[in-house]
Length: 163
Image (tube, rainbow, N blue to C red):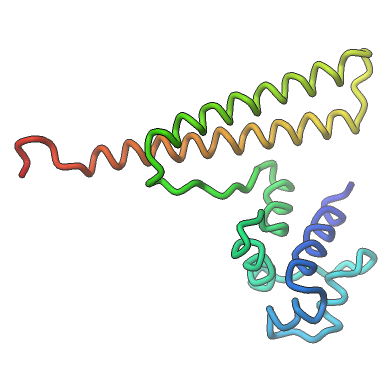
């Protein structure tokens, strides 16, 4: 799928989260229904400008979902967009994040093993393995954020004798 196709689908997903074309038009508040309809049309080349894309993705963020347009652009640049966890979660959260990251890495291994078992690594299988890798990277990024937050929390605590 082309970059334009992926971004179009991401834009359509964001528009759907806004309640469709009319809801998205109300969200961006600067463009007409026709313009939003063009963004939503897979056969039309227009995409929202950055400020409009951010406004559309705010609905997903408010609902705790992955913002579709941001994730689409990140993917085009070879990155993954993830929501970082609350750093005040504590050391139990670090342990849970480590377990989650390990489980995700195991899923990459299983998917890759299944994909190459017949010695024919098909494009669809490569995409599935890549998606598993993205999920593992996201889990590792969440773990890293928690670990670094723990370090920051430790450095901000008064040391004994500093009272």
